[in-house]
Image (cartoon, rainbow over all chains, first blue to last red; front, side):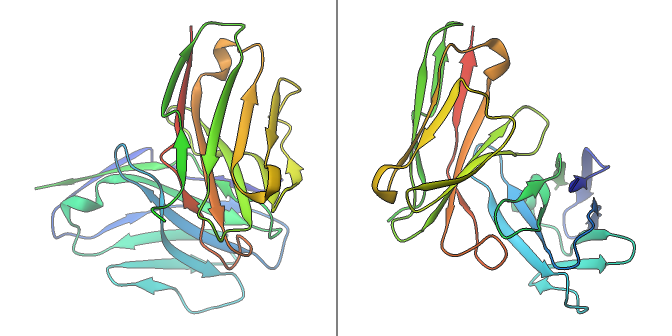
Length: 113
Length: 115
């Protein structure tokens, strides 16, 4: 079974500091894709960053970067220079069969002023 | 095009009633997904369409649930004989291409409360 686990239900960080959200997954597939989605309060989910499993280089998008450890099946999200607008639920997601996407339970991140 | 639109945004119904949700995807997107999200959980996959064809259904989609996407445009999700356990947020998402390479665009969801 393909599963995604986010072990941190809630986290907080001071504005301008760095925070890392954890995600682990389980799969027997060799080719898959990993994602982080952000769901701000009362707003729709949006894609933050994507990582292809066959790429060793970690993906980066401005202040957002990932630490992808394929052997450990770990995919953490680092947010640098945290901003108040980063307050949201963050979901780690996994696509393995090019059809559906599986999501973790989420981490609620609060950025404090 | 302002994105994925879902209606109604909130539906309160009594147990045993039928409800229908509508999703209008981004017009050029060929794939449309339905997810269910309960409090404190991530979205759970229900079903997806490629154009008008329903290609996969989750075990979560019991026989009381039915989804359609006539003409490959908007989609409806109907829940018959609602139960309190159906209370959740129902999310629709669309994309062009596949989840591996495309970007899922989500609607704001339709919240169902079954009394």
